[in-house]
Amino acid sequence: MRVSKFLGSVVAVGLAVAAVTLSTESRAGGDESLLTVTCNNGEVSVSAAKPWHTNDKAPWKWDKGDKVSVDEHAAKFKGAKCEGTVKAYICNGDSCKGPIAVPVK
Image (cartoon, rainbow, N blue to C red; front, side, top):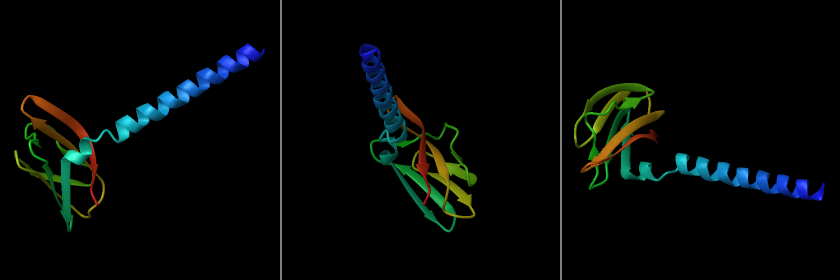
């Protein structure tokens, strides 16, 4: 009985640690720090920190507004307010990342 309780506790702790680790990495993987988001009166602009650049061939989306344009320098959107989340895509040479969820504030 004691051995089974001990093993159950070890398994439970292991699963809890794995769940916290996985959720932390997916939520705060650090990729959003590669992006700068500015918003003024519902006009959003997203740019990437050098040496990264925006991927103009990717399906950028803002859940609270419409895409206006995307080029290698910035993605621009128009909406009613500065809220929601942009799904961003960036590249550095052959290495690309995305979608990266970045909050609009």
